[in-house]
Each structure stands twice: as C-alpha cells, then as structure tokens.
Length: 205
Image (cartoon, rainbow, N blue to C red):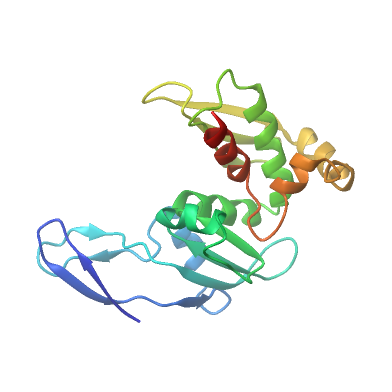
C-alpha cells in the first residue's frame, strides 16, 4: 500500500507500506522488531532515517501457544481501541511500538504473555505512585526476568528483576488467578496488558 511520510527536511517520502506481513514468510521480521529497524525508511533527499507508524497485521507470529495473528495499532489509536471505536479479530493486539517489541520478546523467550502481565501488575502495585508509570519486560535469562520501569523519577529508568521461579509459580496458578476480576481483565484477549488497568487508574485520579 502506498503511503506518504513527511521528513524533517520537508520532503515527502512515498513508500510501500504493507497492510499485513506473514512472519513465517518474512523471517527477518522478528529480529527487525527487536532491534528497532522494523519498517524503517530513509528520506531520498536528506538520508534521514524515518519510522512511519501505521496499523499493520502480523500473521503467524511464533509463540508458545502456536502461530498467532497480531494487530499492531500506533499509539494515537490507544484511546480509540480501549473505548471500543477500534476493533480486532486477531489473537493479540499491541498498541505502540514498545508494546510490539515487548510482545515479540516475550514470545521469543517462550513465555506466556498473560503471566508476564500479571508479574508487571504485581510490580505496579508495589510502586509508591502508579501515576504515569510504565513497566516493560526487557530481558529474559534462565535465572530471571528483567523489567524497565518508567515514571518513578523524571528522566530516570528503574530496573528490577524477578527470579524465574516467581514466573513459574504464577504460571502454575494461572487458572486460579484468572478468577480474580483484575487478573481476568488484564489477561483477556486479544489485548493482554496491564495498561488497561493503569489507564483506568489515571482516569479515576
């Protein structure tokens, strides 16, 4: 699909932007998402690297649950989606590039995204303030999961880790935990995310 992106130099760059990508056929897609080069283009006038942001459907995304379909929506679409003005029939929804990268990292690490979001909620609950707080999984090793926490202090990023046995404990009790109203909301597909809870918190305050 032909798209136009305005460069900082004032030049309008015309480029092909796919409406959907079959990840099983485009095998470099996962690595490109993780390293930030996914769908980057360069200005044909000044050479500036640009990152246009449009909705896209990813098909056959590898996960521990098998190949999944995933709708990516740009950050400006967040309120439209959460208010029901934008819908999806895909297995998963992610909103904004950080969520896309995190979701792909979770699946590449062979983790259950529902468990990861519950762990993020547990960290979120322990924070002194939850206003404007964002928690993202950044790394997975055999021993631990590492998370970046944005919003604790201005211009600083907090880093915390949880041992993998905590992940396993939540995984083993997942079905019981999902009887809890908050956990059920967080883990309800297709948008499995703590951000559904944190948005409501911000609206109430």
